[in-house]
Length: 300
Length: 306
Image 1 (cartoon, chains in turn orange, blue):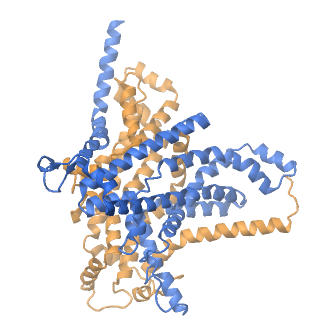
Image 2 (cartoon, chains in turn orange, purple; image 1 turned 30 degrees about the vertical axis):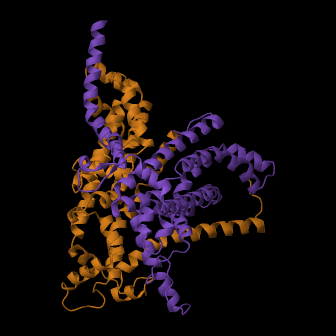
Image 3 (cartoon, helix red, strand yellow; image 1 turned 180 degrees about the vertical axis):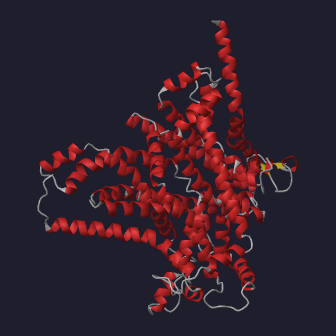
């Protein structure tokens, strides 16, 4: 590669290009930074809107107090459990079904496969879904977060395509040795599918963690509220927040201006609690996220 | 021969039994809800069982066309829906530009940082986006306190509690959340272009913009068209989360899109039958659109998108 001499136009182009990207990147990152510094700064300053660029009077009392807020610990437990259980269920189901749909012997394989795939392209609508959950007795049950999310056609297609790309000799060898279809799945296919299952699980986990609509529609029992739902109510209903502050205020008898809870401090803290797992997980598993969309695009 | 055939069949049937529980789930959560369309033909009142409700035939569908207030309301909702969708379509080339210009950046480190941080917002929920919006732009938020401290304004600006520029701000939030991630697919497409083409063009003295215009953009067009077709087939489905979290009594008239309207009508307003009717119309139009787009794709590109 021979580099031509840098012309002023060239330099100008790069300056503008880098500049625009830098600005947009800051716009994307700053809000998260803003939430974090406000959740650890003096609550009085933060409520006043004084914390914009650097944290001041750093303390972590907000996170200690947050644990004592009514409902928050429950919500965290619900969110964590639905993410863990929901992810395991959908990943296992996707792996199993994806594999089964590659088996030529499966009775009416094509029919079942088509009936499943076609569900990606229509849905009955919000009210019929609501009535369905009600009729099945799933409203106000933890299972409403898990069961409807188990079969995900898109994930099944991904696994099926992946299994089809594996050399068939491995599977055949197992069959010659007399392994039945389940043994073949658990002993041969499942270990080979790890890369695609990693991609699916990371997407499923983020989906479960971020899910908001199912709580809104199907759950009225406060014990089953998720963090996302609580977050929304804290930002949207000033009244429930006022009650919470009172309950938190009784914990510290001498009101300390730095650590006394304010609406802002509670809001910032819970926002950070909700976003932190994503902030940790995303950069670490970025390549799996990217792989997911790439396979999807090829399929699409 | 016959025996092996029979053995094969029983084995195939056993395998079917193994996937049967999952097929039942598909039936319960994808096909059985279609039965719920029946609510649109009754005057359903929430706690009563359907058998105790009056059968009204196409009354709710007629209401949608004939009742003046309802027509007014519906037109307003459709206006919002199409406005948001068309704004989305009009800006659908932004991820392409983002990818092309990010590709011009040679500093790998900078490129990686940009990519990681700009794709991050795609993975947070709309509730958290609202939390961010509230923290920054509410009357007590960051922007207002900075402007007040600088003495530029005396009264806080109402940004979220306002009916002005709702479409635009929804578009901007959508762009903030989706632009970086939307570009990933095009970045991959660019790295898939034969590098020798670029080399050859450079040797022939083509400048940067010439190369972008004549090589990069044409290579990205197929991908872009597929994405565009998906967007067109989803024109009625803006989703509900974004509009629900940003909705308040000030902006309701300009933020209510079809998906949100069905929720407001059916769940908040308790008019479940009417809401189901609206939902049915939406589903039917959406499926038709998808098939039309797919046909177009087959004819023009020789490939279907689904």
